[in-house]
Length: 116
Image (tube, rainbow, N blue to C red; front, side, top):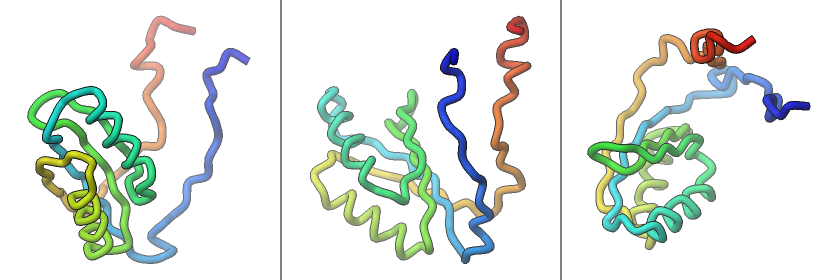
């Protein structure tokens, strides 16, 4: 009623379906006009393997999270992105070796301690 809950989802143990890789990617765009950011983000929404996209402050523009079947699949995605007209200047890839834990919740009681 108040709009706090935006949806429900199931958590799937993807490892039981088969091997995957998770890659975090830092992206720097060639140009930093608003239409450059908009064009990049629009294109990226069509890339199903990109499951998170964060506009960052600091030394690069975006931090992306990809989940792919293997390194070859990730490489194909990055080659397509680099060859397309979305304005990528450079990118750096960081392959996740192991995820000791991934929390599926936020510590609301710590974030908002004074709210009931």
